[in-house]
Image (cartoon, rainbow, N blue to C red; front, side, top):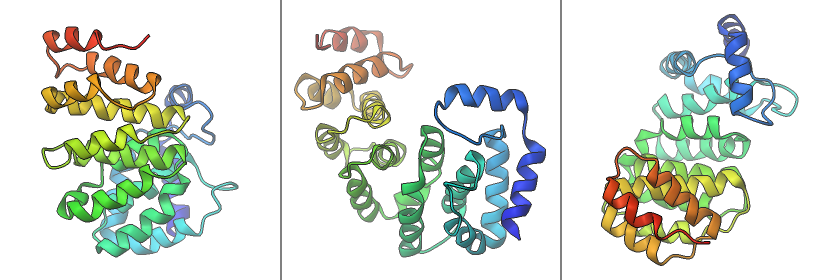
Length: 234
């Protein structure tokens, strides 16, 4: 059975030191084996090439509260990204997978892999918007991180600002995703994002974190950083 084979591979590849390192990065996340992301991507690509549907079916039948590691959940999300499916099949798989996300690690690595979203931007923009409108911390983060991975462009920049202004979730990882998204927007569209930071409806924490993340970016000039620091809220 493929699920057991994958688990055996992961146990073999696990590194105790990396497990301890990841546990510090992912507070509250349990059952971390300690397998590095490049290895997880290699496994996911092989599954996607050989028998994605069977594997995804097994993953959807998993009781994640009682069974399954952090790495297995990561591979689950990555296989969705690497497999070739129809729009409806991708949507069906994401509808099942996104509610399982319980860490920024799984969320961000998997979102970055969904490059096929660019092939049907209107369809997927609407889908991501539906997640940012939920009240779930990681559902919102999924939508926002997917936007920053695939939709920071001229066609969507002002729509992104609307989305960020409408996020009213107390979850730390939702707020930080919005701040990260704004910082990526600033790197690509500094004038538009500066205007947004001058007048927006984001809460003070997210607004100030957006400025902090932008100032940490190597893609933003010193002059721009000096300007936006003046926009911090007390």
